[in-house]
Structures are given as C-alpha cells and as structure tokens.
Amino acid sequence: MNGASAERAWRGRPRPSAGAGRPVRTSRTAALPWLLLAAAVGAWCLSSDMPAEILSYREDIIFLGRQHIELVCWAGSLAILTGLPVGAILSRPAFRRTSEFILQIFNLGTTIPTLAILALSMTILGIGIVPSIFGLWAATLLPIVRNTFTGLRSVPAPLKEAARGMGMTASQVFWRVELPNALFIIFGGIRTALAICVGTAPLAFLIGAGGLGELIFTGIALYDLPMMLAGAISTALLAVLTDFLVGRLQYYLVPRGINPLR
Amino acid sequence: MIRLEHLTKVFGAPGSGVTAVNDVNFEVPAGEICVLLGPSGCGKTTTMKMINRLIEPTGGKVYIDGRDTDMIDPIQLRRSIGYVIQQIGLFPNKTVAENICVVPDLLGWDRKKSRARAAELLEMVAMEPASFMERYPKELSGGQQQRVGVIRALAADPPVMLMDEPFGALDPINREVIQDEFLRMQETLRKTIIFVSHDLDEAVKMADKIAIFRAGRLEQFSTPDRLLANPATPFIETFLGSDRTLKRLRLLRVAEAMLAEVDVVRREDPVEKAGELMRAKGYPAVLMLEPDGRPGGVVSGDVISGGQASARSGTCGDHAEPIRAAVPVEADLHSTVALMFTHDMPIMPCVDEDGQFQGAVTYRSIIKSLSIPETPA
View 1 (cartoon, one colour):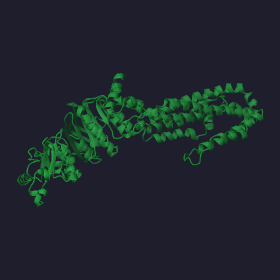
View 2 (spheres, rainbow over the protein chains, first blue to last red; view 1 turned 180 degrees about the horizontal axis):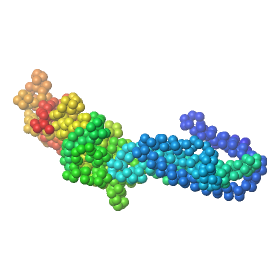
View 3 (cartoon, rainbow over the protein chains, first blue to last red; view 1 turned 120 degrees about the vertical axis):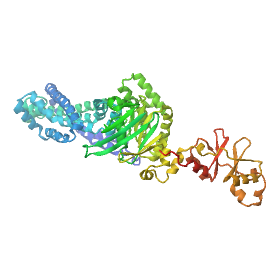
View 4 (cartoon, chains in turn cyan, blue; view 1 turned 90 degrees about the vertical axis):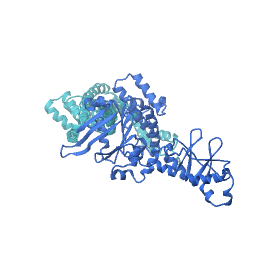
C-alpha cells in the first residue's frame, strides 16, 4: 500500500456530512494519520531488508520472549496477590486516618526509578531472576493497591448500609457488595500495572534475568539496529497484547450492571 | 408489635457526648404504620436504626413481639426485619431478581422458591417479571427502582419493616402513586412498619400513628387526626402549620360529616315547601330527589329569598337547578370541600355506589365533624 492508495481509501469512505449535526468528524479525521503511518511503514518494509533482518532473530525472540513473559507473570501475579489484599485492608474503616500515609509509601515504589530499585535489589539479593522479580513487583504494585483502595472506597455508602441493614455480615458485605462493585476500577489498576510490568521488564536484563531486554540492550551496545528493533517491537507487541487480554477479562468478568463497557 | 422503652442514644463519650435520642417510649401495635416525623437532626433516623441495631442503643430496650432485641443476634435480627432506605440502595452488580432475593439467599432459601417469590412480588407492583427479573438496576426508571427497593424488603415476608424516607427521592407525582400503591399492599400485608419522614403530608397520609420528634425527644405520639386536632406543644403547632385543619379533612370520610336525616323535596312539591324547610331547619338550600332515588336538583336559597314574583309559586321542579356534583359516602372530606367550593354548592348530596341518595353534607356539618375529639392523646 502506498500513500496514494491510502488517500483513495480515505476518499472512498462516506464523507461526514456537514449539516448532519452529529459530531462524527473527529473519529473520521483521526483515521487519516494512522492510515498514512501504516502506508509509510508498509512502504519502508517493502523498500528495505530490515524486516528480514529482524525476523532472523526469531529464535532469540521466542526464547527471550518466554523468559520475559515468565518474569512478567511472576512479578505481575505477586503484585496482584499482594496488591489486592493490601488495597482492601487499607480501604477498611480502621485505616481511615493512616491509609493515605501508607499509600505514599507505596508511591515510592513508582517514584524511585525502576532501574534504581533493580540496582538496590541486586545489592541485597544478588543477580538473576529473584531480584528482577522483586524490582518489577515493586514497580507494578502501586496501581493495583491504589485502584483496589479507590475502587472499594468509592462504593456508595447507601449500598453498604442497605447490605448491613438487610442482615449481611461484614464479610458478606465485602464479598457480595463492595468487591463486585469495585471490580471495574480494580481491573483498570491491574491493566495499567501489567502494561507497566511488561514495559519495564527489559531492564531486568541488566541484572542478569534475561528477557527481551537482552536484544534491546545488546542491540544498542553493538549499534545493531535490527537486533534492537527485534527486542523493542516484540516488547511493544507483548504490552499491547497483555493490555488487550486483561481488557477482555475486564469485559467479561465485571458484571454487566456495573460495567460501562457493555 | 414494636415497643420502645426508655430508648436513649448518646454519641461520643458519656457525659460529654451528644444525646441524639433521649428516653423515647412508644408502642406500635401489630399491622400499623408508625411515622417518625420531625425536622432533620431530631433523632428519628437514629431511633429507627436502633430497632434493627444498626446503631446500638446507649440505654433502654426495644421489644419486637415481646422479644428483647438485645437477646437476638443482630445479623439474624436484621434478616427478620425489612429495610428500605431513601437512596434505595439496589446493588448495581446484581439483577433485579438477585436484588429481591438478597435476604432469601442469606437465609438459604431454595433458589426456585426465592425466584418464584421475586416474580410474585414484581407482579404485586405491576412489573412484568419476565421482562424485569434479569434487568440491572441501571436499566430501571426511578419509580421502578423504588418499587424494587420496597419489594426487596418484603421478600422474606418479615412481619416488621423499617423504612427510612423510602419515597423521598421521587418526584411528587411518582411519590403519590407509589404511596397509594404501598397503602393498597399494606391493606392485605398488615406489616408493622416504622416509617421515617420529614414530610407532614406524607405522614398524615401513611400513618396509623405519628411520633413527632424534636431534639432527640418524643414530643407527641398519637393518631394523625388527634395530632392535627390537638397539638400537644407550641412547637408541634408550628410544625403542623396553620392549615392543619385542612390537612385533617383528608383523614375524615364523608360519612362522618353526613346528615343522614336530611329533608328533601320532590319535583312535584310546591316550591313553598322548600322555602319552609330552609327556614325551619336552617338549610342553605334544599335537595330535590328524582323518583328513582337519585339526587336530581337543588332549590337554592336565592330563589326563595330573591323576591321574584314567580318564585312564590310553581313546583320545585320549575325552580331547581340541576345537580353539578355528588360525592360517594366513602370519599374524604378534603376532596368534598374542594367540590363544594368549585361548584359553589352549599349543600352536597352524598350517594352510594349505585348513585342512590344517602344524605348530604353542608359546610356546617363538616365543621361540626371537625370538632376536637373529647379524649386528647
């Protein structure tokens, strides 16, 4: 596809009618830059042997990609397993005064550069997978804790009062009313967190945990553009795919009554 | 039956705390609606919440059907009491059916039984179960949500219900409709209901008993009619407003003000007979009956005293004006008075469901029926 055909494809679409009164214009015009970009990428692909060179790293991509996914799975699931309970506990009335202060401590996890966390964890835990997982976990934790906390806190008080007044125990109120109604926001946190996790995981290579970072950093060091792109593009695709999959989960797992997506 | 004895609630440290409810005593007989009424911050909601122990009393006792509620596990207690709040509080993550079945599910009912119950309750409020059971609250109108909120409280058929301004969030028209609907349901359900409201008209309409609160104290506890007739304190008198007598009219039936022994004329009677009746009995006008027993016309006082020569002769039929309105004996006096004003009728015929003449009300007979009951509450 080249620029001209993209332009034709655009022309071929029904034009937004000026007098229709519905603001369709933005979505239609937004498609134009994307089509041009796709055309440019397509043209570049055809005109160079870069794709072939990138694909020559196929075996590395698969091997390192698997390591990468492994790192993300460990760090991500540990972050979910710890973030959800911590967020839930902080949202309890007993922590009303202290919760914001504690959340600030979690904020440090994102304020300190992940690279610094990795370096720090390396000094304590040595090199390899374990310190990397720890570093990624620390970087991933905050959105999950924050959203769990906010989601549970924003469940309207009348819902909880109605639940209590009808004779639910405290744990029934939590599991049947608070958690389901916070689920959409919690999923939003997990989605952000996992996308961050996938994007940060290449740094783990620096402390010896492998992953797609190996291609990226080696590519940079050797000024090997195809090698670097092999790592970078796969990481990007992995992040998009993760976000898409969690988005699907969010779509199907959050009850229809409180799911703005359906 | 619900009985409150010396119920007291102090928020904060004893001694320095705020007394929200101060030594409240009253008793609501089974099957009656008791409205807790008062300005905001008067302790009415706190009192209600102490009944299902959402708020633990500082002192005093609550008995439900003679059982001390302190002896019942609060969770079990709440499951046995229907609860409706102003914000409705339907769970947005649950369908209508799941919302209605919350308490049955907590009580471990069989699923089939609880869903059948939900359908039955939806039918009771004229919501088609097939189309509403699986909807989510956000897919209902405000009035429909409120109805579901009420039937959810009825799901496990609790003998006692607590309702905290349940219709407060509705627009006036919807509120009237749902109030009427609820009163019709209550006629067969006969629940014992504690109903919190700050709206006097709502209280007068719904209540068998009204408990007026002020600053944590129970100021007066009586039937709406007695309350309006005999406000116990100047505060209540101000709270009820200067038109409290007009509000009382809603509570009285035509039958209570009707003159059953009223004298009437026939079409063929000489008009002089009507004049004599007015003079002798003090009627403002005389009703004329048709041979089939329906009120057919009215001979007004103006005709007799007008001094027209023709007025002295002829039959009543010649001088009668047609009847513009008649009221059923079970109507309330408020609408009756409105009709009398609208049609300028100093005497209003009362009829039974077949249109047969039963008696008449006059302004004077209505005022007499409003006379203060002899045993003030």
